Length: 234
Image (tube, rainbow, N blue to C red):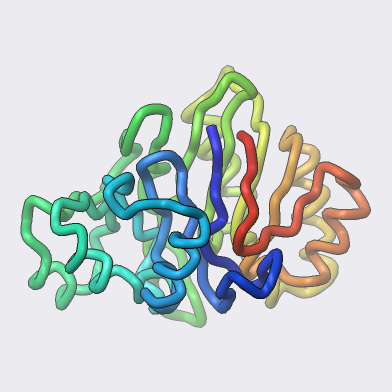
């Protein structure tokens, strides 16, 4: 299965927009919509991806840079299924057609071989946040795809291992949220990810330069730095 990096903080070349958010496409399912619809739309066009191919949008959590492209997308694609946690902004819920919105309360299948982890309760700068991630099952094992990982990578990986107990973890992908973590804790988490059996890491968005450096030292060629315009084979 292909994972297309529609939007992230860096880009493979100047044709693509980049910024502080994410949008990743897996088959018919889009994880987050980035910080601005114009950026999302432009990058989809460069990829030659029609909006008609997108059936599901998973909003990882309620931060502006992960959902700001949603409204314009909905205007153009009114039959989208939107998967969000229970704290999805009420103003969004009020405007959405009830048929559009699926509230995620537990582990849930989104599309063929694509699953939501269910919500994690976490904090961001003392504010409560619910966040979900995706798990993708392929012949190589499972790939965990996270937007921001506020829940902590260790907690996220443990849930994936519980849900798919007999599967290898081929990839840990996305915003790994070690950008504000002190160096000692970052080093511990990076080593623990390796110890937990994750074979490959693809780091983007809020992962942090120190974490990427440590992952690179530990994983070598099995560490990928995500950029708008990239395609990964899971």
